[in-house]
Amino acid sequence: MFQESLFAFSITEWFRDGIHEIVHGFNHMNVTQWGILSACAVAFGFLCLKGHAIRR
View 1 (spheres, one colour):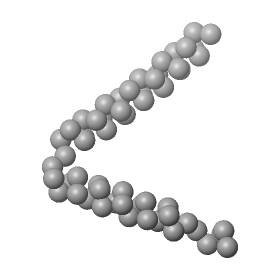
View 2: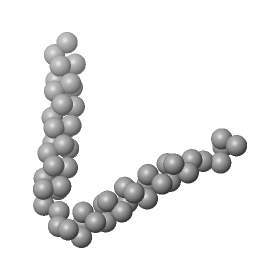
View 3: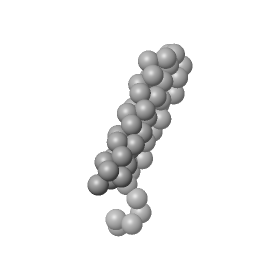
View 4: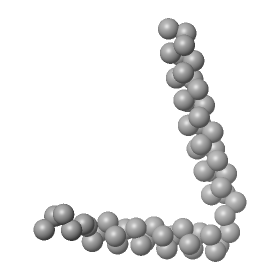
């Protein structure tokens, strides 16, 4: 029982640290980096709209 709660606590800490890293990175991005990120997001969106060749 104690080991399961310790494992869950470790996973929670891992997710919290990961989210903190992402937020910290977003808060320190410059205009060029935001432009690259937004261009990648738009390109990914168009690729998702295009779909894949399996659904013919």
